[in-house]
View (cartoon, rainbow, N blue to C red):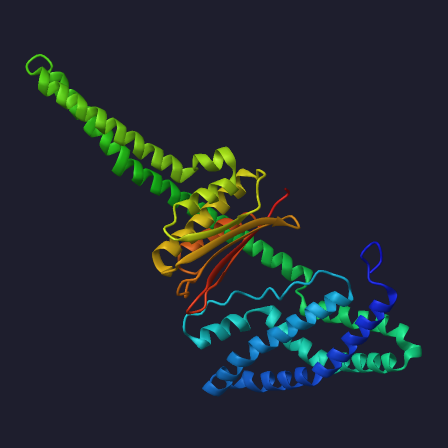
Length: 373
């Protein structure tokens, strides 16, 4: 590497040559997967085709992600895995296949298999021949850069698809945000009605009784006033609880890092914290991340049976990344749980939430939210 951390000319040549060799060796694999998938698609209505696709489609996705990574490396770009539609596993293989079939990126993968096993194979084979002939080694890099650009052009969604998906996501996020705000308002109204409002009504009645007893029975009036004071204290506590549920004071005063630390201190199990966020972030982001972590910790306390948990938080490349994990029994899902609402709240900020929770654990909830800090 030179002073600017750019690959040297020889390193680029060798990297291109390695790319040519690996893609040439993987071309037969792509051809086999293409044939299997093309044959299995018409057989979906019978169990054999469905089972073959159930096993084969994730393998194709893994192969495509490998080529995305290699192609991005040759082009000196940051690589991103395929943004496939999320898998909503309802225990029905045909539902899963319908999700896959409605994902244009899965069809792009299929088209790429055909391209990689034909034209791509020829390009890579020529690159291998050039690399073996050292005199022609300088020509390997432009040739394989063309192959890499072709791969990424097919494997990644087109601009129109990205914009369409973004519009759909923003529409869903807006609707979910409105629903979440309405649900939050109903919760606040319910808490006020069942808590502070009831106590204040009882307080008024108690004070009224005390007033009627002041002249006739001063001792009873004093007792009633003591009860009124206790009711006022309890009502104040209820009001503070409602306010904390809307926007915790520690979050408003000190930011998301100390607020998350305060959440962790209330957990009844061993917590490991790595909270590398000291600066203040936009209020909406702090609020969304705080309640996302709070929901994840609540799930740990209710369902995980964990003995240890951890929270890490930091800003990397302009993205706030948060991870909440535990060593419990696993099996957590985002869909249909409190985490679903959290996901929608994060989406409103262009954020995302991922849950990795195999049976037996560990469970890891990862969040990413772009930020300008």
